[in-house]
Image 1 (tube, rainbow, N blue to C red):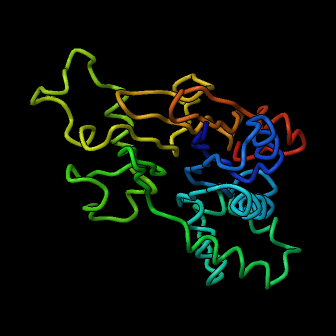
Image 2 (tube, rainbow, N blue to C red):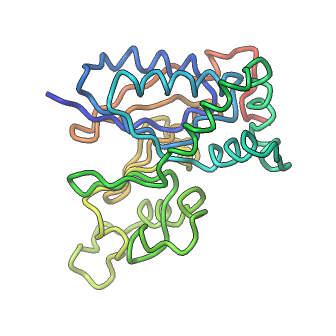
Length: 243
């Protein structure tokens, strides 16, 4: 039976990504939906992009763009940097590209440009890196940056009173638009959780790979998940985005 996995934030941890993929025991017709933030943090961001391109040649893959990916794309295209990016893993990403030839960088830039801002599958399930703010849905979002940065969707879902029923006027309209919503961006470590979390119909699969956590893959049908080892244990000589 075909399985679909959504995979949380990676942040330059190619060793963890490779380990996770091995643990999934994938079949040729399985689908992988990556939720964004492939770069910035651990030392192998360029290698992660090569790995994703390789996976795309073997399986049906969908790649959502995260805020860190947008920064890296801009740098690859223009050479532009900013302090916020450099202080949040960008410096490690630049270093990972030190020995990557220009023709390979061009392939990576094309890969970044083809990433989706969000994706809605055939069962009306939304995949977006961070969230959206419009009660009319992401296609009506006034600011593209909300796909990368919005945390109000997750904060609303995680704080919802379970006594409020879906047919109530009090139930958030954004949550009624989709059967389920899958996001990353906000590490579950902030909520003392090392595994994917659910709030209402929203699933958060960012289990803190940028910091002391792991990369997670969630089967979107069964809700079973697999994880890598902690990225910190796989890169003992590094600090990731820990400051």
